[in-house]
Length: 590
Image 1 (spheres, helix red, strand yellow):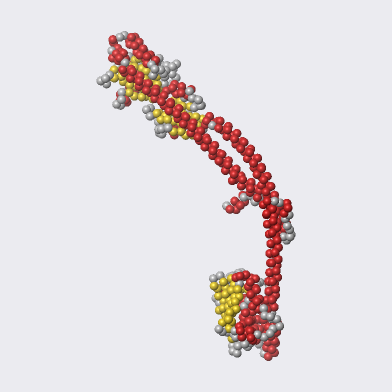
Image 2 (cartoon, rainbow, N blue to C red):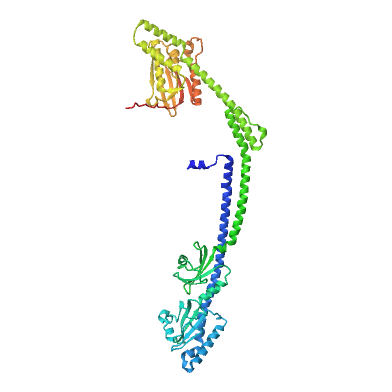
């Protein structure tokens, strides 16, 4: 994942500046604008929904008014003495007179101030065989069929003397109403003793009412009436239908709600009519709501992206102006590498931060020159110490005495000791001449010391004994090559040879944390007596100083050398970092 991110991040500075501007400024700004426009659309949608709900509430009130008109009509018919007289005593007048009286009553009701509505129709039946209507019927009236209408069934009315039928088949002449169904109020006309003396049916043409509401709407809205079960009762536009999933979503949720129908891309509002158990649904196409907003949005974003394009070009030009001197500086740095840092940048060509950067670069080159000179001087010093180490380990006096010993042994007796002597000398000479490695394993360094001690035992006729104390788990620790031999030589020459008896040299090596501590102990004459006994030499001794310089060059402050006086002899201790290097074991193929 990190590799992919590194691969996607531009490498050049000007592209990084350009990308940073796009990601940190342009994209958030665009996202903020989109968010604000979505908020505007949401607010407009909410506002339109509130207005639509207000219209639905008005429709709800007008529908309630229609229902109240039916109840008022029923009350007037029930309280009218003429209607009661015609229905109770039709024999007192002839049939034409009764019909004329009822038609006048219907005309007065239609002309009344609360019932001037051509979508309301009423019919009255007596309990014998007469029927009176305020409308021309679709089919001839048959009293027996009208009387047997399920709307007048008292069992269905329960405890009330009236009943609403929402899907009553339209019985009005088609020239007057083309609706398929009417909303009818069926009721019994009763006297003060609750004795029925007639029946009334008052119907409301809700399709006509719905279409008249639709004509008054400003927007391209559509209105629907559906039942609680989701059945479509009527719609303002005969050619439009409410999708089944929308009706299913509305059904069973009383109250006022609105939502977006993504299928038709419309805003759906609805209100529950509790008295009829209906829903009045309003559908408004979103394209009508946001047509002006979409135009403004398109115009705004065209302008916005045009300005952003110009701004991006200016940003790229500005970033190129900033990065061009840096590219020049980068090329000069590459040239400085190829020319061994012997180059300087012209400071008069730049100003501001670039000038400070140029001066810093030139100062860095000067400091680098000084550092290189110091490193070269230190390298020369290291080579000189290396050379001194070789001289110290190939002491001509030691080699001369050793060769004389070998010569006299060869003359005096013929045995294998000469072979062992020459092997030990060869091992020391080989280690002295090999200058490739500064650090060797402690195991190899101990073997060199043992070879040196083997030779010195013959020279001094076993006057001293050397003991070794160390753990096997540090045998492969790294130590400076030929660091123990000069210290053992000092112990023999300056401490042991002046003793009247035999001497003892102890080599103790241990690990303490991250440090390796090496100690050379002898029971010689001590430092003060050795200084008194020291014979003048043709050249100064360089053993201790050689080791001290080598430790400083190899380990800096972590390499130390101490010479301590003890009650019996001298202790020389040096401390270096513990570096373990276990060699790889080569296995022979089977």
